[in-house]
Image 1: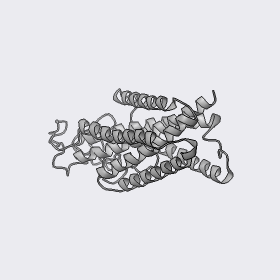
Image 2: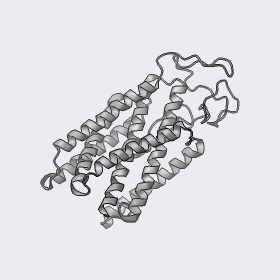
Image 3: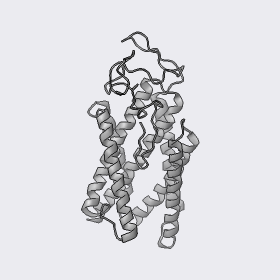
Image 4: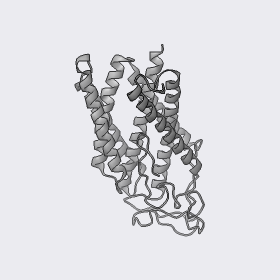
Length: 300
């Protein structure tokens, strides 16, 4: 699947034709099926889909139709995903805390701090785009993205907490954790089923959302004020909720990618892509939660 939150450029686990992660060789949403199906081409959710990692010598080997797969080593596991995600998110958290402590946001240095934050955000964006176009995950790029994203989040969070809404950062962190836990439970219970229609709806909604945000930013830059008002007041609250819901949907897509990668025996290095995608989604949710809570507290 080629998707992302802020940049719409994340690469999925599969490298075949079609959307990566949702191609003709993916399993049904309810689980994989072994064997082959002459009608599988072009349909990502048909029975008999083949293993997209058949060229991986360590991937599960298909046997007779309906027979269990033989699982080998050097494939991605849930432990790999958890450990890589912990490293990536830990890098974001550490650099964010250091930035909060070391980069003052007092009025005399506020402009400088904002400049550093914007520069870090641009570097993080460039690194994420470079990784998105790489055929294989590069841990240095992913951790570099996490470090610069942490600098941006640290300075921004400190400024919001100091000048807009004291205590809102902790609330945004707790809210992000709650969304993650809620989506994970809903996905595991199959209350959320990631289908091709779900994927298409989420991507269309996200593209529309980002287009509106870009238009609003352009109006704010050239016309002054808050542009079209999508980032404040009642509309700001509405779009904040929409942003968090979109982030939750991207989490479901991330979980689907991880599940399929483990099921089909993706190479262990692909766990870095899982960590990259999950980190980007959680950053998206945190930023939307921070903005929404700031608007709500500012209206009190």
